[in-house]
Amino acid sequence: MRRPSELVSTAAAHTLRRSRMTLVTAVVATVGLAACGTESAGTDAGLNAGGAEDRPSTAFSKMLDEVAESCASDGPARASTTEPANTLPSGARETPPSGAGETPPSGAVEPIAPTAGPEVELNARDWCAGHLHEERVTQALWDLKNPSPADVRTILNDLGYIDERIHGLRQSGAATRFSLDLRDRGGRLCMAGSAAGTRTVVDMCVAPATGPFVPGQRKQ
Image (tube, one colour):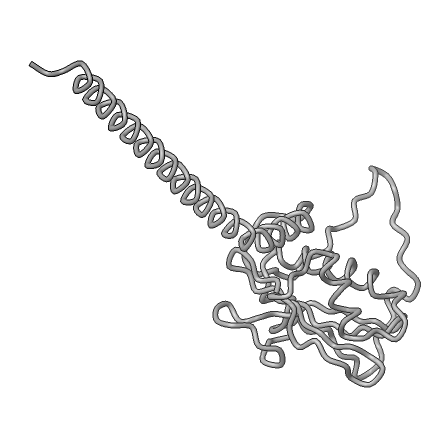
């Protein structure tokens, strides 16, 4: 039979062991939670980073859609249009235009329908959107005095044209030349520009259907 003092010592030992086990369990749980939190934070950071990388391209595509919002959907290459015939109310007499019936001067050349260039190689949507891009870029650069490549890039970025789609940006005399790759949804639209204040010129052009965009190798 154990003495009272031995019973007290045994109980104290059991209590001490339980306290130690409780402490170890708490420490392990805390470390596990911290690890889970770190892993979750790392995963969230990775997702956020991926989203940040995709954001410029998404915004660029949205800008292209907004510019072309009033244009027809993708279609075949733009064909030459024919002016509709004039229709007059019943009983009205058509007055012949001045010079009607006159023989054209000898050697006159009739206009020939284009066989190459944006007029025939761009689909209806790109052809329409191209004119809108020409206008908005020209207006933005028009009042820029002594435009440097950095100035032009800033304005193009403000309009929604991302760096990945700006090519050949360089100083050429008093002007800054640049090209814009606006290919989207299988289209071939591009822009060739020369920023020179009130002498700014921006024209649409035709890029290769596939492959990288290289200024100087595009069709105009």
